[in-house]
Image (tube, rainbow, N blue to C red; front, side, top):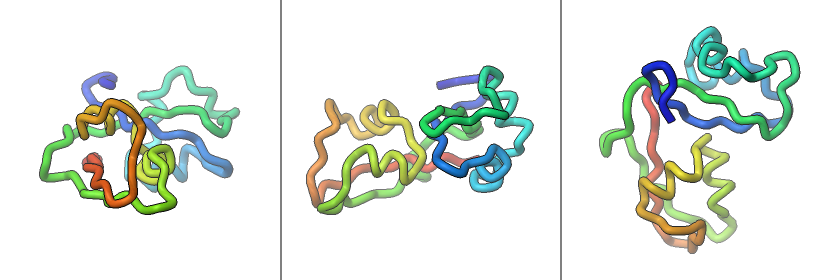
Length: 113
């Protein structure tokens, strides 16, 4: 996703989230998050709403971590843990579907902010 000269990392709102806390967690100015999400009702965030967290540097192999799938893992849980979009991870790993198996290694893009 590209929005006003930066890429977006998709973040799903969780219970208790505030824009201020999200901005501190990802070290992104609150004003930039607001600018990247003009249609989000900041006074009525709902669990599951998606936000664009602006990232300025593209993903390269220098900022990727290897994640080894554990027995209890699901792809959705891994995506939530790292705040990633499903399509990005599937494309980055040349995966056709959501099937993962314990011991499998998934490359996780780490965005510079």
